[in-house]
Amino acid sequence: MKRFLYAVVAMAIILSSCSEETKTYNTSISGRLVGSNVDTVYLERISDRFDGAEQIDAVALADNGAFSFEFNVGEGESPRFYRLTFSEKSRPVTLVVAPGDQIEIESVGDVFLNYRIEGSEESALIADFCHEYFASADRLASIAENIYGRTEELRNDTGIERDAYDVARNAMLAQVRFVGANQDKLASISALHHRIAEQYIPQLDGQGVSIVHYRAVLEGIKQSYPNSPYIALLEQHIADDEALIRLVEDASLVSYPDLELSDITGKTYRLSEYDGKVVLLYFWSVYNAMSNNLNADLRNLYAKYHDQGFEIYHVSLDSDREAWVSAVNKQNMPWPTLYTGGDIRVMSIYNLAEVPTTYIISRDGELKEVESTVTAIEREVKREL
Image (cartoon, rainbow, N blue to C red; front, top):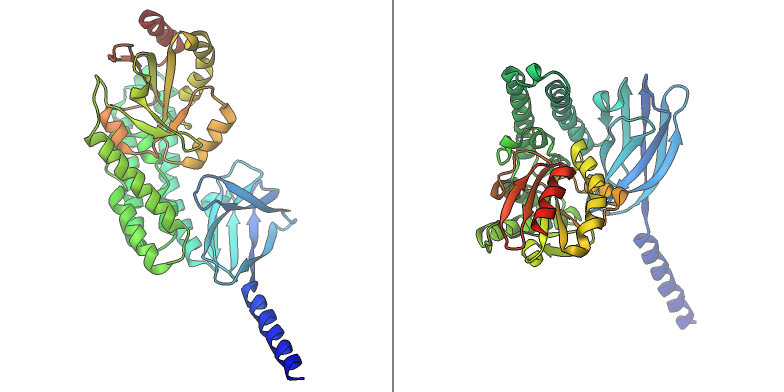
């Protein structure tokens, strides 16, 4: 009889233990989006490496603009980044979700420009940052359209260029202030991923967030969220940053600074490994239309000359890894395309002021800048081959 009782007690303990291990909290994200063009809201969970997102659910907007998601999050699970995306072209709304959160979002008009958050302090912080930062980004886009899409006289208007510089600098300063004030918050990790200002005004590289800010956020997150998976993400970014610093400091110079960068799979490629071949060293950005057009134009050139010793060392200057991964997968380029994470040291050692920028490296290792058109590139490739 005693053995039977012991068995029952043991089983109860095991069942209790299992129950505790699998305990979850009902978590919800709901709200109203009034006066927008949205008809469907998609809930996605951003990967812990910020290189993709998994769709969790999708709901149609009710007639009054209401929507609601309910899902379970495990007890004790560290808060994760989610986002709401829409069937219109509005930017996604980034959220930090913890077990049991009951997050409410309200917006009137354009969702991204006007949304407000309750029920999540971290998510509300992200909203505040995005409203300020992307207001500057939209202003920059408008100025850029005036500079590059209009008359030669307008393109040479130094007043407009000065406006662009001031707007970009203010955006960078807002980013630095936000990260500095919230370095123990997950919201600061979201803010660190943006490099919009530098993409418009390359002269400002180095004046915004840097490895110093990443280190400060790392220490802050370790204190606030000691079990966060984003600690590893920050540590990896810092390690990559430090590796690039060492690469620049210890670069083995031929007639050009050597580079060692990774592709989408993590495989590394060293520029000097192509010694003895004719190499197109090509710096680009997924956000630059000329870059994407050149990617397409180079396909025939690569197929025509690759067997004769022509290679492409294709370097993305983007800081948004997710956008880069998406572009690489979509464009399916036949050469390796490599990633810097937007590190300014690569831009500095090659004195890059714009994208696309293209160089030809001869079989003898001589570096020569070439116009970023397929016609000019082919002319130089034929000459060197």
